[in-house]
Amino acid sequence: MKLLGKIAREFSGYNILESGKRLLDRKPLQCSLYVTDRCNLDCAYCTEYDNSRPHPSLDDLKKWVRKIRELGTMRIALVGGEPLTHPNIVELVRYCRELGFATSLTTNGFLLTRDLVAQLEDAGLQVIQISVDRMTPSPITKKSFKTILPKLDYFRDSKICLHITGVICADTLPESRAVLETGLARGIPTEVRLVHADPLNRFRVERGPREELERFIDSMIERKRRGGKIHTSEAILKYQRSLLRGEHVEWTCMAGYKLFFVSAQGKFWICSMVHTDKHIMDVTLDDLYANYRKKSCQEGCGVYCAVNASLLVDKPIAVLGKEILARAKRLPSIVSRSSDSQINNSTRGGVTNPNGAHKMNGSTEGGPSADEGVTLRESA
Ligand SMILES: C[S@@+](CC[C@H](N)C(=O)[O-])C[C@H]1O[C@@H](n2cnc3c(N)ncnc32)[C@H](O)[C@@H]1O
Ligand code: SF4
Ligand code: SF4
Image: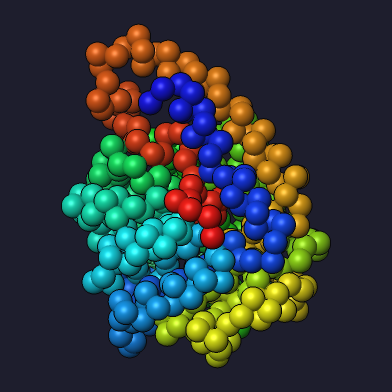
């Protein structure tokens, strides 16, 4: 990729002009759609899967997606359960893109094959998040690099932007740093974040020692400031530190308004933790706007995508300014990599690090993310 293209890509994630519209109007920015409740794994901390329920039909999913778009939503995040268990996932991605959504998908990655990645890319998927908690599986979580490392190669020349996200709890903490380093060493934007409680405010697993967690979060803030590809904003890292310290954070939750969730039964959910019985087909923009308010569940909220979007809408200059600064710190290394690659042009086609890691297309340049926004085919 040409140097200017690389630099543009470094900053494209925030898609300021498009996202900016949603900072000024009353329409929603993002919807997370549960493509299915079914899952091929059983992570001990998770309350978001239920194998007793059938997959929703493609027709129903398409109907809900049309409605979500009619509300003016710009981005759609396909989540679950495990979205890749749905037999029509590729068709659904294609449909979302045809409607003009910026489209991302979150997966445990176990069902990814080279062919499926190619199909998702062909369907127009822009961002994929693979969840990786540990280096090796444990009774708490099987989501480990042992399974995922060989699959990273599928993204080497893919247009899909890949990022990695892990959950930190007592079980994963001893390996969380290695997860972070493994992702970053391969040029993949990577994030590990604190486990959150269930809708009844109970932690399903041990959270881990507070001081150690705090030190780890602090080190990620430092790394981020130095231009490391930590795949989250400094604001969210600081928010998590405040959660650990039990400090109050001033914010207004925009869930149910700027971002909302739709269940695998088509129900409108404020967020993954706060559910309603209203069907998405009956939701109006006024219904959404009514959720623009502080909420009683804000204290200790662990729905980080909601906190992130809320902080962005509330304090766009502060949040975006820090992010742009952090990304600007990556420019010297992009420039030097670019001139290196011109000098060593003959060695291209599989850039391999001394440790055997290779850099992947769509991820080395800090591409757009589910949380940050991706390029739209047309405006909502
Ligand atoms: C519910 S999963 C659905 C998508 C897919 N099955 C996966 O695991 O990526 C979405 C994300 O939520 C995270 N998650 C689930 N339960 C969590 C919890 N209690 N605390 C923090 N993250 C959690 C998962 O690790 C994953 O990154
Ligand atoms: S893979 Fe995802 S949906 Fe399935 S149990 Fe784990 S976190 Fe939950
Ligand atoms: S504060 Fe958190 S849990 Fe409550 S509605 Fe907002 S995002 Fe959901």
